Image 1 (tube, rainbow, N blue to C red):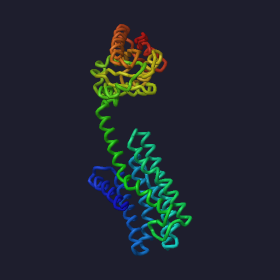
Image 2 (cartoon, rainbow, N blue to C red):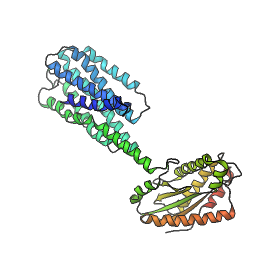
Image 3 (tube, rainbow, N blue to C red):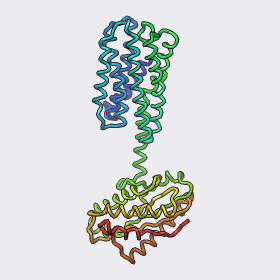
Image 4 (cartoon, rainbow, N blue to C red):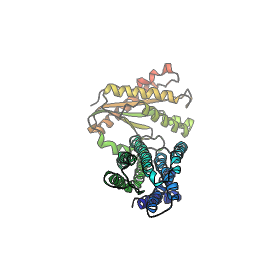
Length: 384
């Protein structure tokens, strides 16, 4: 049964890979499961009177199958990573099995294979945990749940085999503990062959959501991204409204490519200056909104000043030195439960700052020693 389940799971991955629908991770994962299913079937055929060549060839191939399955997940997690060392290690680990075919050495073979299986399953668990944390893939925890229990089970089976608690059958069953340690992993193995498909589906969903929620030029969140996060914001916080001054003259004189570069530079400067939990959204044109949970007025002002300084540095060399490049940043502080009111207040504050800037006509200087005039563009009134 486990043999058939592994082969079917492998085919489910290999066919889409062969037609170009899945990347190389599916080939490793799929062929690994097919090979695992074939070697498991070989153990049954050996018990039915098959020749020793099944043992001589099947056990080393089982090690390669373990490695291929792990490489499948690793390639899914790190598409550009190299797997040569893993394959080389698997071939080295499989070598002793070429010299063990006698039935009297069955305990060694079962124990050895179980130890290797436990190591590869542990490697899969650790990789899946890193995936879950790095990419917020909730389905990666399904992989953890399906592979983690078999680690101690295979360790226990290895211990049992080395202590002679198996019979002369290649299926590894005798009675009591030995039989249970053979049967229990099957309940997990039968289901985990398709677990990587669930992660791929979730990753695809995340990629689609990113396309829908991100501005394609700046990679800032758009209004759809704002709406999706709206319900998460509770308690106190601050809102910044950012506008690029003299943006139209910049486009007219230097071209839209430079204007686009200025927008990208602003988002990068803003993202680098935001505190933990802060988000930047492209509100429209050259206007951006920042949401700062738990920030007070001092924190909002400090973040705004940091954005202005980083933006000034980023614009060095992008635009001519005689062209005014400035930011107008309005702030509003209050409860994020009424974030729409905060955005309106920050917007009004930003326009008040812009009016003062038009009167003063400040220009962001290109030297570090002259950066401080940017901070004067930040408004400090309290909103609530």
